[in-house]
Length: 296
Ligand code: TXA
Ligand code: MG
Image 1 (tube, rainbow, N blue to C red):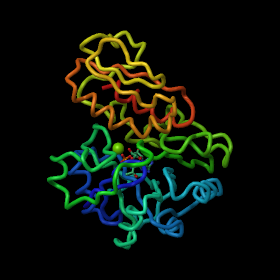
Image 2: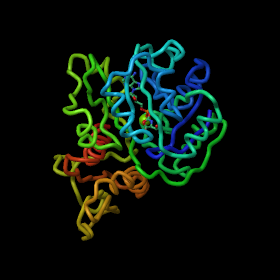
Image 3: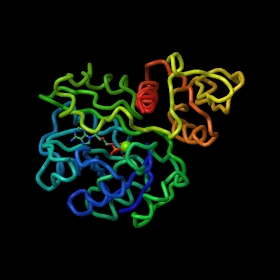
Image 4: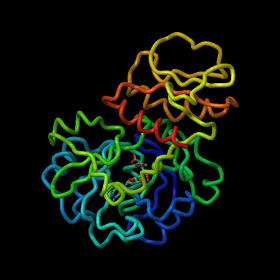
């Protein structure tokens, strides 16, 4: 079980085909057993080895965007144990673009299960300095691949009855996905727990309460830190501030998000008041993480 770099965030990787190795991941993260893991492959040819069925839309997405920050949820083959998928009949599969991630998967010779390498509910690490020491004490080691280029987790798309459904916004923009498969749906509320498990509202949270600008609890002032988006001007009196992207670039904001949340977490503010981005492109993923952090 090793922490490895991917282009999105660092992952905590172990053999996806062995229940005992997968259970080590759950233990090290303090992750509930009902939150399934993503299985990582090094080559597109390995997809058929883990998924029993690949609808044409899923194949088109894999061909267009792999390797890259896209995860596909498909019916699973028996070689993937129920521990990996939390008992679901589906498996989440991703082929990362980070050359170190692919080299580690190839060296292992089997697909690797890898959730983000953070204790459950905390912000994902985008460089080795952000790996949690308590968690790492239970891990065999890590590989330093430098800072992550994308900065937020992969976009997850499920296929249910052949139709694409967005299960988690992430590092690949929905617009790009829709340019290949057409309209992508959202999970129906009544099925949401089954098709999109593990999407806890309080994920990705710093320890300092985070509130969205405009929320009545988002009181600014000397005891509040500010997480801004766009515009070069410094905010008024505050406990500290960062700008996710002065130029207003959502991809830059995604790359900076977790590091800046950590840095503001360390200034000793009473609250972090965060701007939302326009809800388009990677702005959707950044807003999703900010909203979940604000639910804490
Ligand atoms: O970018 C990423 O995806 C990173 C890097 C390391 O690859 N990994 C990552 O894994 O974000 P994790 O464990 O933090 O998020 C995995 C999420 C689960 O919480 C769940 O929502 C979803 O993937 N998932 C996994 N298997 C699923 C399945 N069979 N059906 C629906 N959702 C699934
Ligand atoms: Mg995670």
